[in-house]
Image (tube, rainbow, N blue to C red):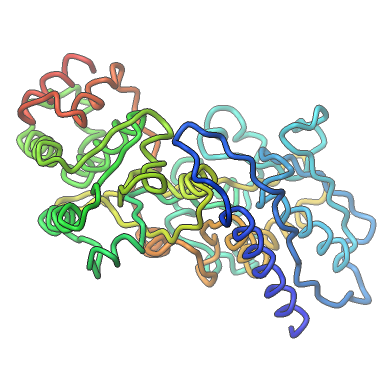
Amino acid sequence: RIDMAKRILALLWAALLMISAAGCGTQVPDETTEPTLPPPAEVEVPYEPETEIKKYEGVQLRLLATMWDTEPEALVMQQAAEFFQRTTGAQVQILWAADPAAGLTGCDIFQASVPMLKEGLLSEALDLGPMAEAAGYQNKSYESLRRQVMDRCGYLAGIPQIPRVGGIYYLQDTFTAAGIQAVPGSWTEFLDICQTLTDAGYEPLALNSEDAALAAYLHLERSVGASGLVKMEEEKRKFAEDEVLVDAAQQIVDLVAGGNVLTAAYPSGWNKLGLSNAAMTVGDNGLCAAVEKACRMDLRWGVFPWPGTGAGTGSYVSSDLLCVSAGSENPQAAFDFIMLLCTGDFDQLRADVSGGIGADPANTGTIRGAKEILSLAGGFDGSLPDYGDTDVFTRLWNGKYKTGLQFAQSWDKAY
């Protein structure tokens, strides 16, 4: 354990050096500049002593990953494979996204998402429920992520690996500079924060125009509830006839009319948090690394659900999954390697080097508020229905509608 601590400290020090090298002495680029960053720091792994008996000696596992081998998460996965071989004897061959030999044939483990499974890969995924129960996985994971997989797939078809949390992302240091001590829990408190930010010289909310539909859905979902919106869509009810929805849309109209929202084409909406003076945006934790890369800055992030009242959560959660192939000859060994990646030390390392969120509730993350959202049961997964002409949402955030009813009527025509 002492050796483990030293190596974790070495990891954090290497990451600090990388950030310093990227940020010091460089000219801040404009919002369209694609910066060239130094190569990522090597990931140090907390190796344990080798065991005398290796239960999977001679076992060969093949893992199909959807990521590039240069990504921070990939570095952790590579060295987890080394650790697994040292301690169990099993050799893990990883095929990356760019590998021409990549394919499910002969794979023991594959990376997927719930939509990918639903769109044709579900028959390839083994039911991991019995092995997960034996391993006590329920106490090493978030119910919201487990339940999402089981509700949509019918069984535990994969183990959540890289959580994504959607909501309103904000810069902690900007909130502190403006004297804001707590995130809003109601619409009134959110409006107060917007005014406080404006008075302090900040732009409250910046959006990518491509995220207009998501931002509107988060607000409407908070007011109407995801199940309520789905029911309205299934029953083909007129949005303009729903008083709660119209009132919620009016809140957005008033928010925009008050000068609280900036919109710009991707990725400029996000980048205004680093290159301009915006304080908040909408999306998931993938935007954090994108903004820091574009702006060559190390930023402290926080996230909170879209504020308001009603039945919805105002946020969403989803995750990449690691699945065991139904045709694997060594399913227990494959499952054990997945557990090594998704819980404990390696899950913590992945969160640290990627600036992400741990899949294991016992682990910490770098984004304030993310664990609280993950701990909420229910909510939707961030995938939006096909709304046809999504320009109605862009026009809403650009202030083109004078009333919430006018927006709802336009939405009815487009959808």
